[in-house]
Length: 211
Image (cartoon, rainbow, N blue to C red; front, side, top):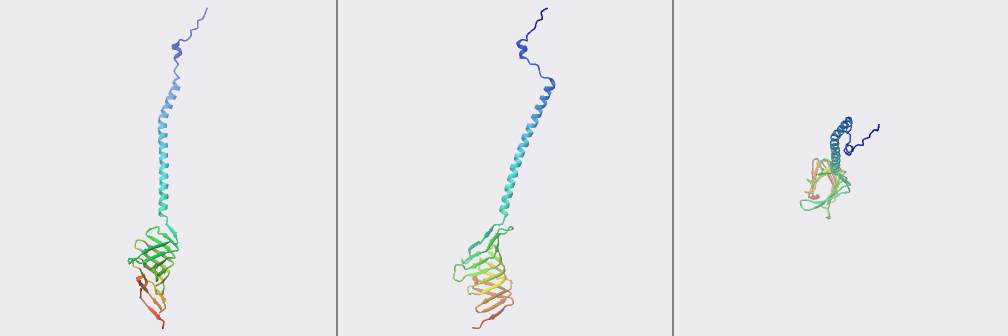
């Protein structure tokens, strides 16, 4: 008996048998998982990038604040100005620094202020330390304050206040003065007119030299 073998028709060749049910379900679960995971991954990446940008901005802002808050220091500074009568003065120091609490305050080491600078008879006051207030233009001196006036008088005290607006020097501490006319000690003093007039107050003791 002859056996006949039937070849598949063209329609049968085009058809493919469907995948097994288990594989189809696994593929479906994978697609669903990817649809959930991919958006979450994108959101996480965007969040990380935003966090990095924010952290960088915060670091830059903090660095800027540190730069602003850091005291400004100067070596051998010199300030120039004029009082309310147009008389020039100069203020110098070995070192100066802005006060961290108030930028209107300048902390000085070995300050020296010269009133009536540029004239034939200037008055000079120097000290160990000083604080200059730029808003009021008042200089507070402390520690071995020494001064000389146009009459070649020498003054020594521990504290003094120089008002560069008016050209006056005042002090509430004891003062000793040496001049060609003699010596003088007092508990307080006021110097007016850039040294033209000096008023001694409080326990004044003087010794005059005979001519």
